[in-house]
Image 1 (cartoon, rainbow, N blue to C red):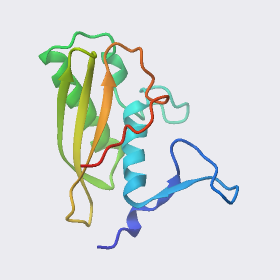
Image 2: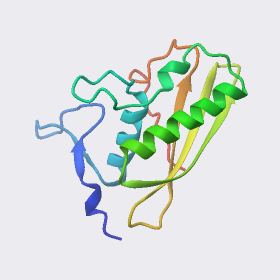
Image 3: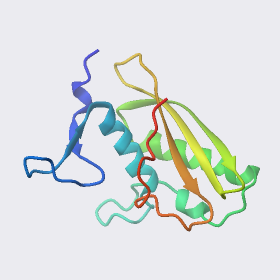
Length: 142
């Protein structure tokens, strides 16, 4: 299927390519990076687009219980459906890890004009002691 509608953009994290220019991402990788950026951006963080992002930061230091897990699912669904129009969100599920104080957010989506479902896992730490920008390799494909 034709995926030209996905486009390309600056890679995340921002890197320099071997030719000395800025690293770009395209195709499915661009979608994954976009979802990741949406989820880790706090509402109000962007000056010219204060409503961009997700409400996940509101849940840092919340107890790991059913109410928090439901809010995580809701906040992820709201943010992705609002800010990523190039995909169809199929499902969001959460897998808590009480020993680590974290939740793995499993996101299944389908790029529009494609029949191939894709998935990624976004780690969310309720303890707030881990910065997702420091961690590498969070985007996992199944």
